[in-house]
Image (cartoon, rainbow over the protein chains, first blue to last red):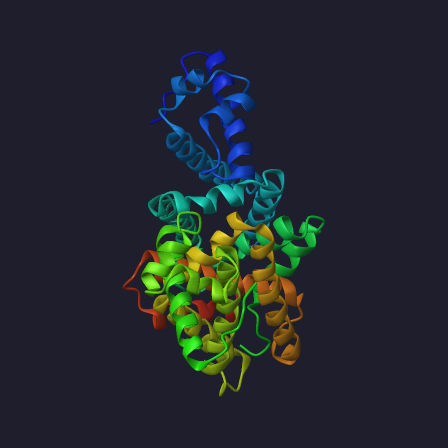
Length: 194
Length: 194
């Protein structure tokens, strides 16, 4: 369970704890990280952490939920002025790749949920996909006739695997180039003879 | 290090050990699985395992390498008579989804490499992508002009995320339907107005 901070100063402390948890979980993994490690990095007493989170698991779940929100919020911000679905997908993909570049621990932390509690992992992706499919349904006049959940998972797969390759594996990749190439596929399909 | 079996009977024992390791790693994860658990499930003495594998890590690496080979081999088999790239991608995707349905532990075991040794994880996907991109290059007359590594990662992302959703999350999904929907995207792109 997460307990909200009562004061602005409390919010600052809570954010420091969350940031420290992100670094520790990202580097050492959930199982190798103790509340003490997080407290040390956040420069607070272990007891302070328990003012905000009932245990390590709650802190992890909070971080995971926050990631989902943050990714959607960032994509929303970067696509606010997009006029077409093409632009939306392009700017959305670029925003996602740039965000994971800034937060390289995200992959480790999100995927580790599979080993902490598979339900968390399922919920994370199902929530993300449901919102994506809803958007695709709303833009149905610009999109081919296709099952929007299948389409959402295809697009999430593309974003995640391009992130793996061009953020996680190749740290110097030109993300604009990668997105332009991927957009050819989204626009035309992969085959010359449809 | 992996030591090859010296006799046919040795091969049978080795296979039993590998199968037991797959079940144990898949259910409990790498870190929670001991050589003893694997020995017990395989009905061999722990010492017998060390005749074939120098340690738990080697056994895990063997399994991971075998997965890459097995996936490619299975896709190769199911696509042997395909005439067009469309057919190849369709049958390949279906073969992949059916294989992970038969081997539900594959996801857990492959992705856990990220937490055991990130190099294993990178190698696994880079090897897979390199071979995929090579195939795409060979079929370049049937494929739009696109960076074949970007394309390979897009296709791997699609397969993996459709597997997550329709094998791992929804265990009753109609895989033929899912593949037909996904193929619309591969054939036409996602947009009505290119």
